[in-house]
Image (cartoon, rainbow, N blue to C red; front, side):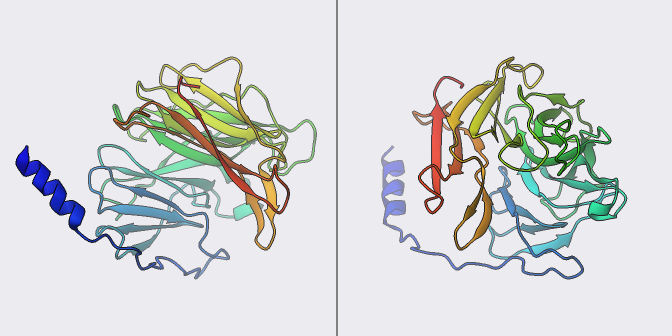
Length: 313
């Protein structure tokens, strides 16, 4: 015990850098009309020096030295790669890259644009990716705005997203909803998508659209999801690893003014929620958190909010 205490004292006396040099890891948009945006990044839980990021439209980057240097890759899939990058890693060290589809390689003009959610896998720290699998192919509906979660105990993967009957449609008969699918075999296959949102929204990609669903996993394998719709943050949960869900969604917070807003001097932004569960051994273990943004205090006063639940929602 004395030796351990001395070691802690020595560590405490080591200088801690006050700042770090920012590293530009991608500023190239050769061959595509989109500059790097919508970044997603994740650290390998088995090797914290291994970091993988994804950026629009079809790029991933990986580092094996804790982010000091990076290698850029253009990712391909037979289902297409069309933005909304989401990177996550399981507890076996596999990385997953979820993105939108473009199956006929015609972009927004083709029927294969956003017709499913594609998930590609890397077993070598992001250096290479397989062709991928997919969830939610329910033509002619459009699939958009997904996110991934992983169970640390069994490495189940969970994906939630918004389904549009027709993206951008102003037809009152076209609706949006939150869907869920899971994989129990490290993304080799995915379950049939099910609707978990009690209410459906419109298809205009705005405040009246059900959007921004992000899943997380609790201490006992619960799956928690929150999303935005109609000036509220909705919450749902599954206690059996995604098989069944609440009949009535829970309103976790009021989101005055909605999730779709403009920040002065910046432009359009979104305040969609992000869900997380504390899996640490701290006194807050098991607490579920949701953070989101809104302009409840005025259009020139955008705020970031955090709500929490200590009883599973």
